[in-house]
Amino acid sequence: MSESIVTLMIGISTFLGAIGLAALIWAVRTGQFDDHSKFIDAVRHDNEEDLQDAAQMAAKKAAHKKAYKEKIRQERLEKEKNYRPAD
Image (tube, rainbow, N blue to C red; front, side, top):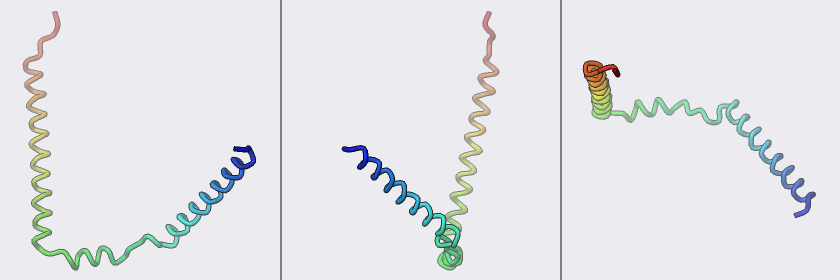
């Protein structure tokens, strides 16, 4: 391809990219992506059973995390207990 066509393509793609970036910045500044009713609808459609399931999953996750930390602590203590320095 000739040098003028490559230059033209780079110029056009840069221009279109700048237009896209300007449109994105405009949309963010004017609140086009904000959804104020999202949280209201979520509360309206949640039921007690779903909330209990979420609480149980959070408790299970916390229990697994605690058990994992305890396992790591026990392994570290066992490693320290059996430590023998090199002669």
